[in-house]
Image (cartoon, rainbow, N blue to C red):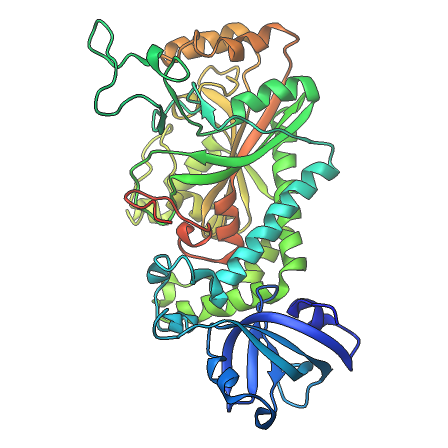
Length: 480
């Protein structure tokens, strides 16, 4: 007999075959019906035991959470809720579990909050909610690679340890092997990083973009997909200190081509999830509906989860300049009646999530790509427009979440880039290689960054970004 996953058995067209199944007990009713789950699907497989022919000691050890192996015959089910079941001929307890001792009662999501489950690393993913989220996350990650590989991109591993701050924000985690209690000092009393492992100050990266640009200007189309880090002391439902970023960079692409790429990519991976995570998304949609019953009507989602995903697929992304968006927001009722937390008064304001969601959900009723932002609120590497005050930046805005993608056409002109770096006090010596790239066959090129957890959060409907990553890293929390 060959071991099969529960997902394989539930999809099997053959019955009356001998099978071996392994998994964890979700329930054991009447000393007869075992609901078994092995993580391959959100569904359980019913295993029927003729208890009169089994050792009573084994049946006593078949408790919720126990790991077991079942051998038997796969047959058509006589009961409701499943098409097939296993008539058990042999039952082996591989690992016992006392529900009280190990708190396996978390398998009932009504009994424990999502916050409590974050403290149960060994059991969290056994719940239906987190099993569904993490299987969907896995499928989305595969879809990311599949899209880029099908479209001629080269996967590039950008460095995790870096000496540069791509964003210029300074919120980075330092990497050092100096003695924290007694670091070497220079003649000015500052920490002497020349004595450090890399002989300079280094940090965990916030982005692989700058390095990816160098590879795009040799390989044409590249993408990075890896962990990034930000030491921002922000305890919100939208921020993590460790997160994964998807960053394509393409030589000879201008901003319009960059917007085309972002829309095509996002639609591809969301469609992949809809096609390959049907059971999990159905569960997550129903979970969200139950959760929102406790919210006031005006705080509930206007669309169900899968309806929201299809909304992305079925609508062209509306392309709107920042200037036009500001005019719309200034004239909007929420702004005029001061319903916005951040009132839009003048051109140059940095848009907040409430403004982005208004544009998507209320005004255009479609996903939106904003472009040509004020240079003062965007990064140094974005191409300056002829007006001297805006840059070729773009943000993709989604319902319920606001910005999900940020990108730009990169500044390819050596003199302009150098002038911008000096004006923003960004070291041209540290980033000499990035600046010099503009001397050796410079050309128009563009790219964007998409926070993978934001994508998973949108696709699964989870309200907190900490619930879509296996082990969240946030201020004051580096458990497990």
